Length: 334
Image 1: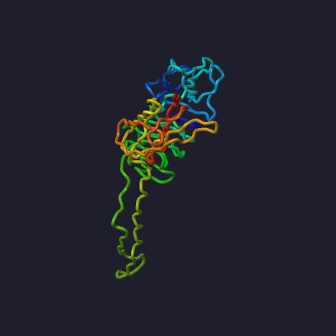
Image 2: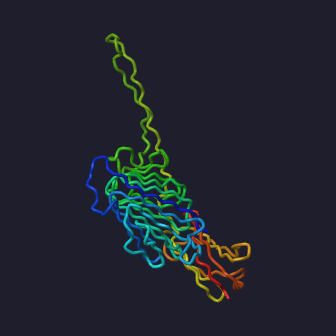
Image 3: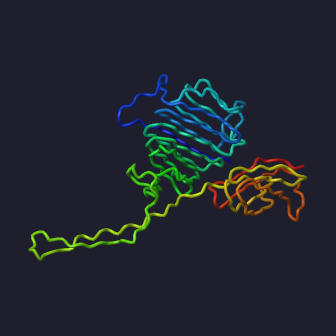
């Protein structure tokens, strides 16, 4: 069941006066919403934006009053979207950018922000099954992603700001100034440290010199305060490789299931076949697979290679290297 993902993007003004973007009324940013295959892309440009993306736990009410899993995107500082992908709803009376899009078939939601000032992207999630990827192209603000869920954050070459993350995130090496909580793990407080890796431990821990003591005679001296030990740096807890799981698709094959799993990189994954029952989804069979990057194909059957019983089935794929599971669409075997 989809869970709530809350994303708030607030692009703050610069400390010194800067020309306002050439946009009508109070609009200070522009937003576009597009879909290519199984990726929904939301691009924001301009000097100031107020953006929210929510995946409601109970789904969204649709035009026919049905409730379906969906994502709601809204930017109060952008004019209405000029168009939205097929299947999305765009109310005409909101007065700003607003749309609802079904989650069916999506494997990724991508937010790209290209504000030139002190921007802020604030991610607050409770871990959606559709992963959120964030790219901050430029500016000198902050990406706040320490919400306990697995997001992916990358940065443009001209972004000199900070990423505040947690151990469940993948933060690309393109982001040079990264904190986990209050601890720096890449770069530092000074923007000039952008891109400097985590400091390595030093073998020098103390140094002692003697200097003439104040008021002492020519022979008097006292040791200067010992230099503080160079602290051992906090080990970077951020995932250094991207999450492996991309998407899963299943098709029927003589009352067996042909499973195709797409991976970004090699990993060990567990494929679980579940059957729909009156009490929910019940596990039928499990297979553990060590796989390389690319598309991995398996044909799964019931115990001893038998065909599955008639019914409705789905597949759940998990990996210890991933912060989320992949869940296929359900299909009926007859």
